[in-house]
Length: 127
Image (cartoon, rainbow, N blue to C red; front, side):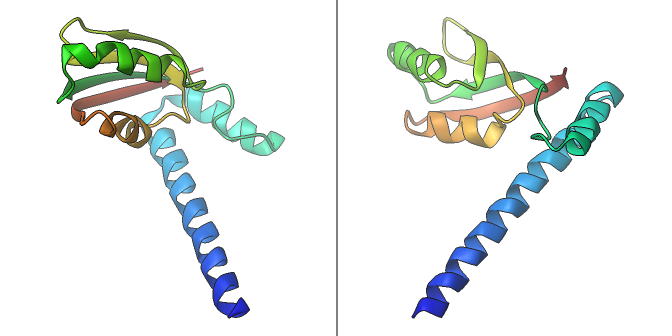
């Protein structure tokens, strides 16, 4: 029984490292040379690879009503990874400035509680 629990724990840990690695690779590929150099230097320095890297997200939304706008603003304000955001009046688009660790998938999970759906997405990374 202990072997099975250890095997499951090890497998989950391995999967989480794999998914984080894919996030880093995707950001690295989508970034310019300044961000790539920063990520390389962070790796050499032994700090989080995305330390000091910022993200600019432009996101299209659907499924969230205007009456839910305040609740969405509260969710975004309470997330420490988000620096600032601008939400359209009709709640069909949002622009988010955040730490690079805040990804499209995490935003999708956040708005899923409100039955929101991402209809368009673009991200740029900077230092």
